[in-house]
Image (cartoon, rainbow, N blue to C red):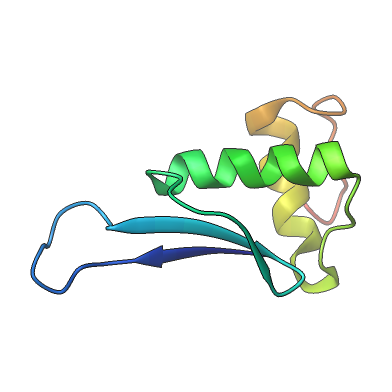
Length: 80
C-alpha cells in the first residue's frame, strides 16, 4: 500500500498527481492532495477489509484510532 506523489519539475507548489497503489496496482489516481489520498487509503482498507502491511501495522493503527476515531481510541501499548 502506497500513496504516490508526483511533482512537476517546473512547478514547486502542489503536486501534479497523487495516486494510491495497493498490491502493486494503481487503484486511484488524481486524489488531489496527500491528505485526501491518506483518508481515501484508510477508507479503502476499511471498506475492502484489507490487512495492514506488517512493517506499517503500528503506523496505520496510530493513524486510524486517534485521528479517524475508528475502533475506539484505545491504542495498543506498543503504539502508545
